[in-house]
Length: 348
Image (tube, rainbow, N blue to C red; front, side, top):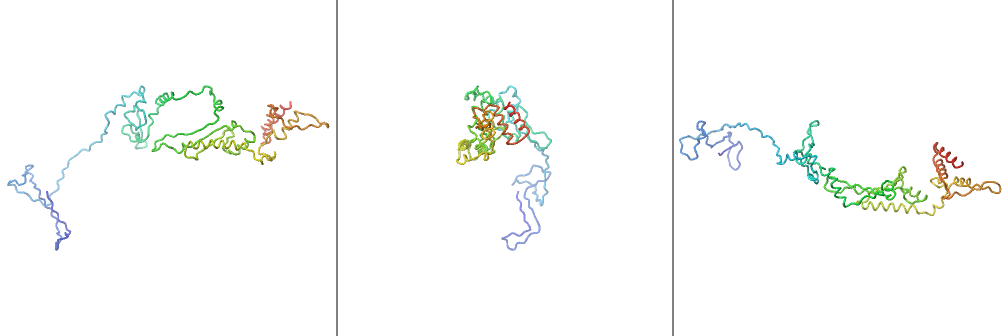
């Protein structure tokens, strides 16, 4: 079939050619009459049939009703394999041994994820892209973890039977180091928070005298919890966990030796310069020693004795000193009652 179309516009290159006001379409296709049907003569056939010249032929549109093909889900050959699995008797660690993409043919339970409308039912597990997006933890089920732990037991040593209480553990292992490991789905396995190291220690387990303890408490400031008596050091300045752990050990060592240092000006401090009340260095302890060791002089007056030594102090003496300290630091009804009870117990 050949078409020839001439428009109203002039054609460049043809001088003096004027636009034609008609639009002619010459169709040289051989069109047979309706009576001829499909028995059209071939080209060059010497037939008596006269070829027709059709100008502006009508457009024949064949209206064929075509049914829209339905969307059929292409299922794998073993898509019914999950129905044959018994959840109660299956060896799950062999079905799902490690982390992998969600497979609906291996899960014998109904799993749903995602929905189109707020109150609509969630989609099933077959051909569900939402379940394939998220990481699954079917390989970390309790039976699988128990099997892994049994395999790792041969590489471990039994826990000491002597450390059967928490007090014994704290006595033999006073230092507690806390670190965190993070497991997530990302291009890298490193997490910035994994570098943080927390070290906890009871201050009573550190060998300090009164002077060193007072200086130690001033250096640690708010890192010490008075209710639990625990010192907490958190290090996160270095990029690696090992570096932060070494830095925490360095801080503990520096605090310990710095607390035991005695400067020259510290020996010049008097009782009025002390920040805390120390009963064994004040007049109250000397008065107690004078009462217990009462010896009159030539004029019949009491002799003022030095404070009692640590080996001479009894429990009632220490209770009296603690009651005096509580009254001096903050006077309260409970403190006064405790001071009254300790004084009566001491004198009677």
